[in-house]
Image 1 (cartoon, rainbow, N blue to C red):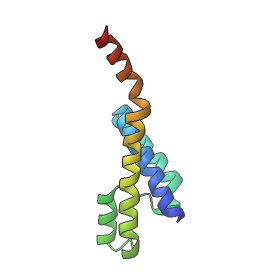
Image 2 (cartoon, rainbow, N blue to C red; image 1 turned 45 degrees about the vertical axis):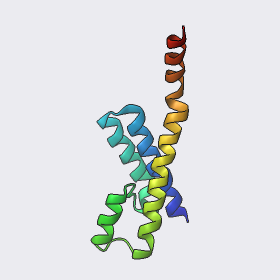
Image 3 (cartoon, rainbow, N blue to C red; image 1 turned 180 degrees about the vertical axis):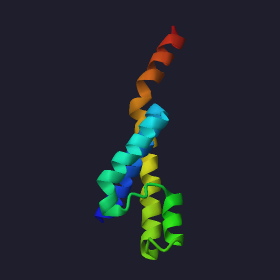
Image 4 (spheres, rainbow, N blue to C red; image 1 turned 180 degrees about the horizontal axis):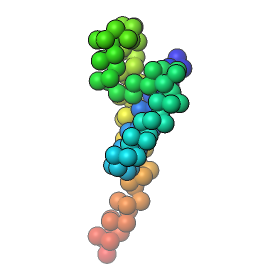
Length: 101
């Protein structure tokens, strides 16, 4: 169970940094931090394509493939939800106030 939680949180963190900064250096740093913290627990895949590649290479067991993919997608969706509702929200309110005047 811990490895799935780590994949969820790592994917959420990485995707959140991607949405909020768009900076390649920040994204690379976020991936490095996520891998250093979660790699020993889950393998630090954080991407369904990487999960499939690890399975194809024989480095990931078949029973772990679908749960990893599901939690990685859910982590990315959670990051998108957080970005839309918390990070990007004040900017939208300012634009709506300017347009209504």
